Image 1: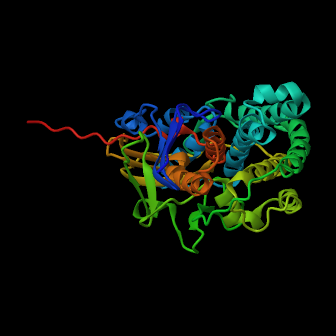
Image 2 (image 1 turned 180 degrees about the vertical axis):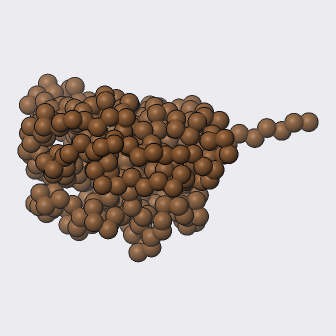
Length: 427
């Protein structure tokens, strides 16, 4: 009986460090492990004992690509614990900041990390040698997102203007970024048309989707948790439905939803659960790209990300068009003992935070569940379904296909490797 081992020692074009191991016997896979070997970063432990105002700044350091996602989920959880709701112009400003992050993150993934797979290049740099105008368009899109984050957040990486209740300072004028966003919107529409023409493997999975759902918006900043089986629950009930567990081959946790492993969060889930709430241009772009009402082909997730850039640009311009600086720039938030829950839609999927504040206004407990950790079991299931029928292919070809399948999900391994289950036993 033939034995075969597929081993990827270091995954490329993903954020962070991980590896893949697949062992086979005959026509069956006997072992498949997406190995997250990046050291744990202990952010939950780092937050304990800190002032309740500090998590938005500290958790932003979890990721240099999606710091706003961590800030927004942290703010909502802590504001919930303190009985504060941010809405109106302040909420619009938070949305605007988040749209900037969606634009820059999706543009980075599409042009430099994912598109090379479809065009046959080992990297975005190699692709640029033959497709310079395309890569320049992607970099211009990313720059537009970065400029929007900087205009609202104070700087493009790890914004410093975010605080509980709102912002330290409201921008006086946002017209300087409107012109860039107009250009970005046209570039985003061109991006949808470009990526929809790629040659996609004929693969579909029966995904169990999870994403936030808002009654009037394509959810990004807030909403209830919706599942593709028709169920939904408030963010405060997250711990009752999502359970994390350790697996031997990973320094990041896997997650189960209502006892079932392998659910999917991220662009495909958002689109499946919220597509009718996309902006008008984004809806039209999705239809023209042939996405349909639900997309279950993970390789086509690149199209959904491009559509979400169109949505982010169009909605950002709408907010800027009616923008009046909120006064004051933040609501007062006073510490009180209790627990709060918050979730938002990071570019890679639903990001959940929970904090417990003690009587002294310090963080007594912190729990952060990033999207990549939630998706790990589903990525392994995708690989199993993709590889097992193709075990007759040469190992180099299978290896390349596996790496492509992982990059479909744009995993942020550094974000997911920060769990801590610390148990001290004293004799």
